[in-house]
Amino acid sequence: MLAAMPDSAPSPLSAGGPALRDGGDACPGTLRLHRADDGALARVRVPGGVLSADRADALLAVAGRFGDGELHLTSRGNVQLRGLDAECGGGPAELLTAAGLLPSAAHERARNIVASPLAGLDGSPPVSGWLSALDGLVCGSAAAASLSGRFLFALDSGRGDVDALGADVTLIAAGESCFLRIGAEDEVFRIPGGEGPRAALLAAETFLRAARDAGAWRVKDLPDDVRAGVRNDVRAELARTDGAAAGPAVHRPRPRTATPPAPGPHGSPNAISVGVPLGRLTPAQWRLLTETARRYGDELRLTPWRGIVVPGPFEGEDEAAEALRTLAAAGLITAPDSPWAGVGACIGHPGCAKSLSDVRAEAGAAVGPVGRLPVYWSGCERRCGHPHGEWIDVVVTPDGHRISHVRGERRDPPKTVRDDPAALAAAVATARA
Image 1: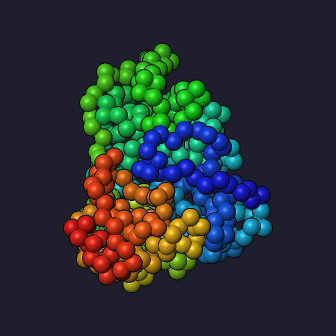
Image 2: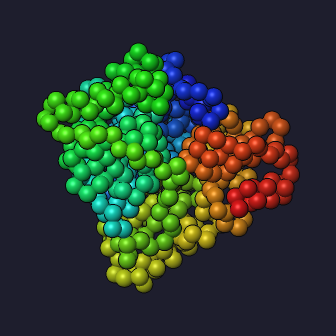
Image 3: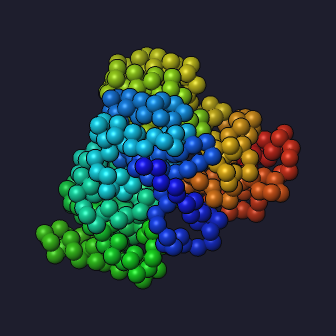
């Protein structure tokens, strides 16, 4: 059944403080859809962004049968289906369950796990064991069903890419052991690698107990003393249950800017990476990616930067180059010098009633030379899906387009451009440079 949903909470960039629980969890899923101006929206969680070719086919089938046929990638490596008919009922969930994409109705919005997309492909260690174990533990925990759709786990292969996303609980590979980061603190503690998934779930369950009193959606919303108490409780519980020695706190600053996989071949080449302009895939593009995956490793890895990694192995550089040429001809980003590299936008008007403009069209009209910094266009102050770290923020306001340089929690004084597309494109290009 389609359930109407309230609007999601504003981004912390515009909220001016932590987002505290003042109602039910508004994040959409596949059982509870969101009403948008272009129809209902379903968000399908894809833990770690990992999809088999068959499951990718199932997503396309749901999009075509019930929605507008397109697939939209999110900033957490998930997939959104838009334009769903209000009368679709449980049809999408039924097909997704049959394909193994909805293993637990109670936990479908809690399965928010991002993972380093090149793990095991570029010389960094794989995190697939952690991923399957953590997803199973989350789905098997009655308490974890209460995690909000905003709560995020990250599994980092040591590259620092998803560690930079500021997840609520992060595991970082470090040889035979791993580091556990709770929240975005610069201190971590070391635990045996095999204990990682259990420790991550323990941290989430401990957060939930603290969040009941604090009214918090995420770890960063907890008061400082409560957050410190969660970390101490997790370490004590690990030691009590099986003696997993959590080492003393180690200063390991979280990377402030993520480095996504560059478009092109990786790992000599064990994989190819492509970007998706504005995260929007046509049925033909999705089918081509699925066919490419089926030809090689039978796997797609959706990235938190609205891109896709196709693991191989490929028979040398020529075969990888040929696959990339085919994908480039379909309109995907296959090289770092693409004008579309680093350009992102929210859905904008007419898909979202709150948007003040068709920011996707504006972003396309302003595409120019490759910039040093990514740029993200938002149709309103909520900035849905904005990136992390350092980026150029373009927000539509009643007074024009406000452009500012964001560095973590800080931003430079903004510049506003009024109703002049040429001036707007020039201002964005200058800011990105």
